[in-house]
Length: 171
View 1 (cartoon, rainbow, N blue to C red):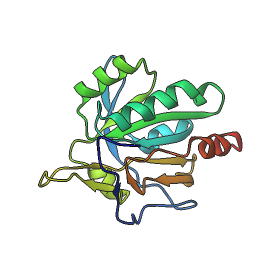
View 2 (cartoon, one colour):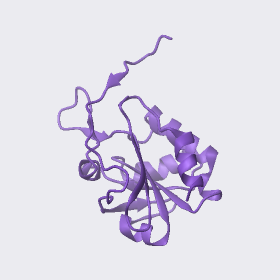
View 3 (cartoon, rainbow, N blue to C red):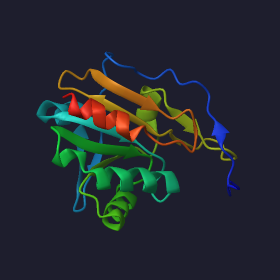
View 4 (cartoon, rainbow, N blue to C red):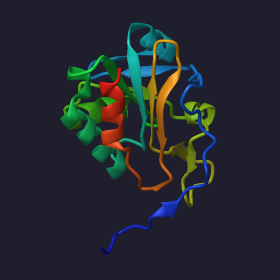
């Protein structure tokens, strides 16, 4: 298959893994109407969280990831709250949510500090000082323990959706 882009192998990431505590953070959490600063730990207090790190809004991997999550509608069948996180601004998130027809909320982290806490930074080629999170998924329980972790090994790379579904079914 002739691709219009190169597949890039990413360096090994020293990210949090199963049974480790997920780093907490506070960032603007955006829905289709407004945003407010929210701590991950506050969301987790109400439900298990599937935290989805994705490239900037509008990038084709972000579109594919969120279309797949929307179509699978896991939050309709499992006790889980699905939230995303990228470097995109709250304004970009609001537009992305509307365009994708999503009911999910997205954290805005333009400085990519949260990806640094999770050790999943992807430095963008040819853009000095610009980075975004590499695609990653963390299933985090009420004690902030990671029950499942997947982090991209290459760009582009996509989550193991069937594995995530199995983990959700085991909740």
